[in-house]
Amino acid sequence: MTKEEQLEFKTLVLPHLEELHRVAYHLCNVRYNAEDLVMEAIVKACENFHTLREKTKIKHWLLRILSNTFISTYRAQKNVRMIEYTETSNDDDDTFSLFAELSQPFLLWWGNPERELVNKLMDEEIQKAISELPLDFRIAVVLCDVDGLSYDEISKMIDVPIGTVRSRIARGRSLLQKKLYHYAQDLGLTHAKRHTHEKAEELHTEHKL
Amino acid sequence: MKKPKNSIQNISCEEAIQRIFPYIDNYLQGKSRTELEHHLETCRHCFDRVEFEKLLKARLRNLHAQKKSDLLEKKIEELVDRF
View (cartoon, each protein chain N blue to C red):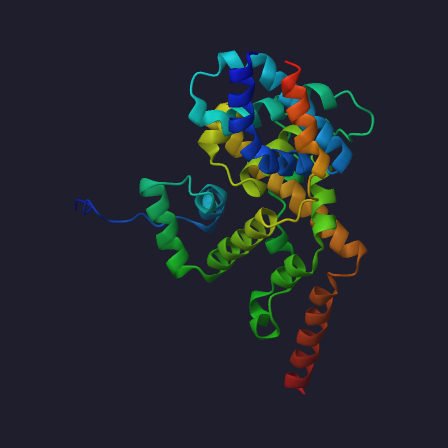
């Protein structure tokens, strides 16, 4: 790279560093790995800077490099937990819903246990659940929910059809909700459901008496 | 008797649930979106589900991330200077 190119690269890339790090952090869930991943992506970006035609799209270009670097470099690493999956898997993970599991529409006056759960879960628990998602689902969920990108942007970024992006986001979210439900159970945060059930039964019995 | 052009087709809760994620992601458009919104006006359960999914999405969007180290930017500048 010439001095001018180096300067141009820094001017274009550094303003996106915080966002690149944030996405990397949620993909890796360990700060050291996140910075390592950002550095590796920057090396690739330097090597391929001359191929970037539209400079206004640099953020998406960088995120694409970051995602691909994450997939290729980290797939083989032992400290990144991998769960294999198939696109056509049919288990109940695909349809799990925290709302369906926790909502108590007939007990509206006692609050919303599903909403309370979301508010009670710590960021660390949610991050851990994200980090345990299968790789492709994790990338789709992080880019869509954490980074706020559209289906179209994600599709172009990771080079898969929009239908696949949509399916990965839906399945990633279902899996994530299942993991959050299990954390909540372990932490005793799902007592509200049993509690409200008990209350309902007590009231029902009192009413009959 | 012909159906009026602008009539909105009623969809089931199962069909509505299939459309919830693309709806909250602002991907669902046109007739599919209108049908879902019409369903949400009349189905409290699906309406609550949409509100819950929006809440969870917002929770993820606002997840705290550890700050990058102060050295990262410097390391990147040095790296670029070597290219």
